[in-house]
Image (tube, rainbow, N blue to C red; front, side, top):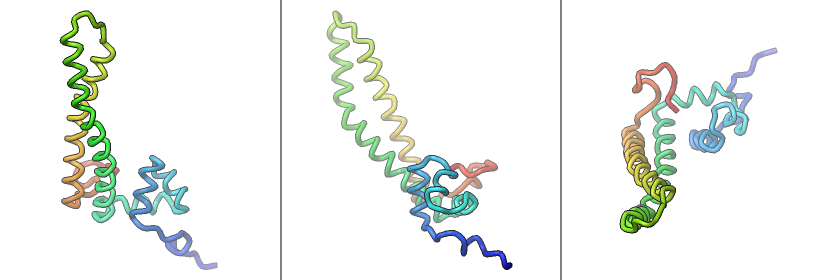
Length: 137
């Protein structure tokens, strides 16, 4: 009996479908299972420039939403810090810590978003550019 090629045995899926599955499932194995394809197919796509561009753009979209949401709350966080600092009778350590955490993370997320947007725009791909032995994605 003649062996079938892998592409004949498995359903054809787009890079976008693989990216969506990776993001929603969190692992290559679970993404492959959800799509009915082999893990090997996912890994072979992950190292292509086209796939990496789509993947980084999707990550940037998700991160952009988080940054926008956090940025909407920065003014409130600053007001909370100012209120706590002005009212010396308040013991609001928890509120102050939460406000500081929000401010600290907003900056980090903004930097991460900028990096992902650059990677998506430049077609930055795979592990070759990171000097690693495995894909970053």
